[in-house]
Length: 312
Image (tube, rainbow, N blue to C red):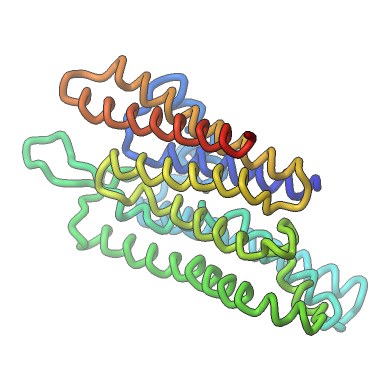
């Protein structure tokens, strides 16, 4: 139960980190809170790495996109060292442990991997008179699919193949799960424990919803409008609240309560943040601030209504 709770809290923190990567002009103290959560999205600028090791934008982005790969390499190194010490050269027996560890890494860091992959596609209009668009995280890079921007897009495309392949593997495992359970295939269930261990056996399909949800949340900063970004986030989080409240797919009541509470916390944060934007926005931003605030309030009312109906 503790592991499930920790993974749910980690997911919640990463979802807040996604909000910090949007082009939405969050105001203090919301902006500072969201920026802190960028640690789990492999944001090297937060720790001011550039002050110690100045890097060109392309290399800096490549390091960020490879953040999950570094974690995988660390796990592989630890695994090899452990096997050599405890099992000498018999790598076959501990393979399930390695698979489980790698699977958990991809589950936990799926959203940051997607966020890092789409950074070159997050373009904002530059305030200078020429009206060119630049990469949000790297304002010196013009979004023209040439030169450094083309290199960054290429790195992002390669990086994106990792989460896409992982999601495809999860779909395959979910499809095979009922059949393998009937066969009492312990090897299969142990191999994909990272995917199904958090959920009740009769609710194993929900594992794919949460995987797809986390991937879509990572893609939201690439949407061209603030309205679209907030709308998609609120929709995905609201659906999560409704499904978790209705079906309780996680093992243990505490995990279901925790997932619902964390989702409601994100909705409250977005609602508060958009309301504060409306208070401090100038005339040009009042319309979009009002729209975002309306989405937040509508989603909050929707979730509250569903919870009342479910409890009743």
